[in-house]
Image (tube, rainbow, N blue to C red; front, side, top):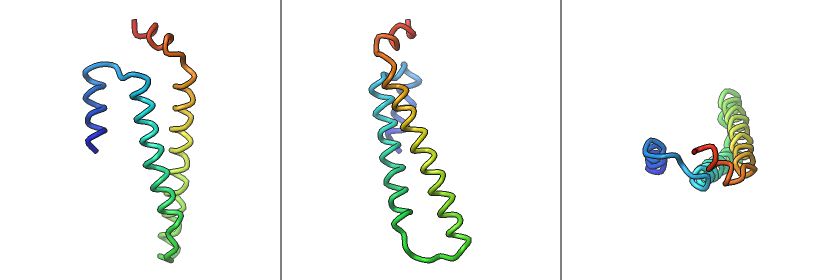
Length: 88
């Protein structure tokens, strides 16, 4: 998780750019999509308790994916010059 530490350090040092924030969000989307695909492709039967846990994980990952995508859409809708104005 080196990238998380780098982003946190940058955040402490200065404000992140729009591009950096989007890059981080895209990375989180990719990680969550990969995890979701892996869980959904698992065909072994582990019993009802673990199946319930699997379904909970799928719902959680789906929620996070929707959340990250909505953040990307929101951030993309903000013109760069508006972001710069707010920082001043």
